[in-house]
Amino acid sequence: MLSNTSKPVRQNESAIPYTESQDATPKGLLFNFLEGESVFINFDTEQNTTMIILLPHNCNETSVSEYGYVVFKRIKSDYTMLEGFIDRIGGIEFNNIRYTGVQITDELKHNADKQLRRDIISAIFEKIAEKGLTSENLVFIIENSDTDFSFPDGYSLLMNIETLSRNVNFVN
Image (cartoon, rainbow, N blue to C red):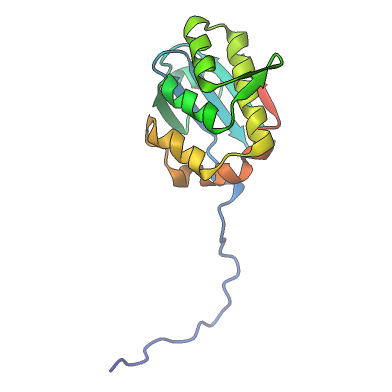
């Protein structure tokens, strides 16, 4: 019934990548929190570093470009997402005290001090460096945010996040 119209391949195709390259890792994510300040996170897989910029409320791509970085995707969310994310990774520790997500966001609502924000971000990345980031946690961020960032956008980030979380630096 069907005729055999296929022909054998004449050459071997061995240069087709089966996984994403390091270049596919999102370089810059801008988090805008409805109740608070903005945070830009730049992942550099070539240098195995993560650079953080603490920004005022509701910043945009222009604010980030003033520091020489490019926003890959913007993630708009509220502290409820941050609470849930911190709880999903098992809470965070800094100043020899363990905190839940509710405790952290309550503190952020009353104190927008840059050093407090640095401590919280550092503690989150320390936890991620220790335990990694699951695909479920990435989906949680996406589903609880207003963003066009998608799971395929962040897939290669999941593969590199532990290494990138070990070398976190603050630009400001």
